[in-house]
Image (cartoon, rainbow, N blue to C red; front, top):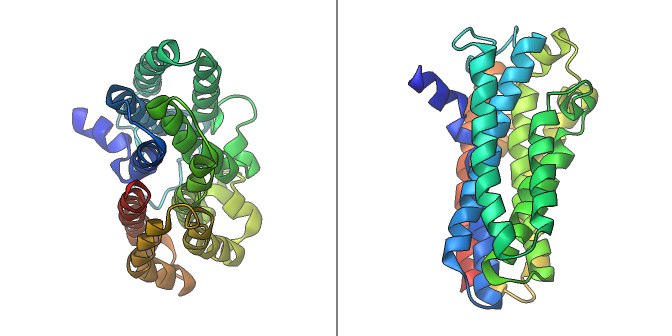
Length: 286
């Protein structure tokens, strides 16, 4: 059972939680000092939001029957690996851990973080939960860009250094775009199954060909967005080296791969996030 819940946390998606925190800390370092205990708590919050969202998504899709037809790994509820109640509880506990860490940061900085934290939890739950899940309305990518790009990077920079400037916002753009790319290729793979259960993701709304274009635009857009950061932190251009990692998934998606063939692209996109994030972090901090 424990192994199932570890898999249900979707470890391959966790770079989307780690990278924005690393970049936010680098921004804080570049603009002043870093308060490390706050940075560590920011990482706890980010990981908790990502894992909690994954469990919430598993629960909501499972009880709706939206995971009945899948190409990717089995889900906890949809695959009968765990009860809906247990998965819902896992989501609530994980969000709770993030809330406790977030409250500690709020009391140390500003109580406005309570509002932002509540919005993050709501966004995680309502992605596929609630009466009108925004993930079923083609809005998932927008929320991922905002919360796992702009909010995560600027929030980390703020709690780590006590202030936030334009650099944090600009640095959040490429981070958010690569997080979106991960969701786009996941939804590209799932188009046939999502159509069958009337799950209207952005990929379903756009169709196969335009979703492939969107994936390429997100990946290449992340590299283009370095131009916004380079004037003040020119060493960030070292992240262009990660283009080498981007070539394979871009080629596979452009080549028309479908179904299980796209699982390799998910893995490669996660690796791209980590490579880009590590180089980008080092370049900003340098």
